[in-house]
Length: 179
Image 1 (tube, rainbow, N blue to C red):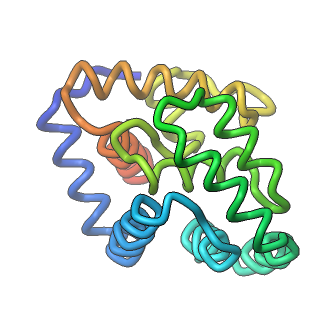
Image 2 (image 1 turned 135 degrees about the horizontal axis):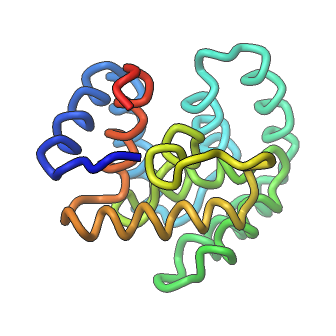
C-alpha cells in the first residue's frame, strides 16, 4: 500500500482503458443499459459473466451454464429491487444479487460497478492489496466486499474521483507490477 495522487490514479485508469479496450467499451454499454432499465435480464447476466471471464474459457462456460438456469422473471424482479432503490444498503444489494444462480460476490460487484461506477468497484484481490494490504484467506465474501467498498469510497472521496477510476488504476498498476 502506497500513496498515489489524483493525477497518478487518472493516468493508471487511462492505461487500463487503453489496455482493456473491449472490456472498457462493453462496460460502458452495459452500464448505460443497466442504468436505463434499472433491471437485468438473464442475457444481461450472461454478458457480465462474459466480460469477467472472457479469458478463462472453462470458468466462462461453467458460470454461463449456472446463470442460464435462472428464471427470467426472478432475475428481473431481484435486479429491479436491487438497482431501483436509490439508498439501498450495500449488504442488501450484494445479498440480493448472490441469491441468483451463478452470481458470486465478485459478479455482484461487477453488476453494481457497471450500474454505479461512482460508488462501486470490482471485487478483486489486486484492489484489496492496493487499499487494504494483505489479502485474507476466503477473501470473496459479501462482508469483505463491503470492507473494500468503504476503503475504495474513502480514497475516491479524498481524490474526488469515481470509485471505478480508483479501482481500474489499482488493477492496472498491480498487473503491470508497479505496486
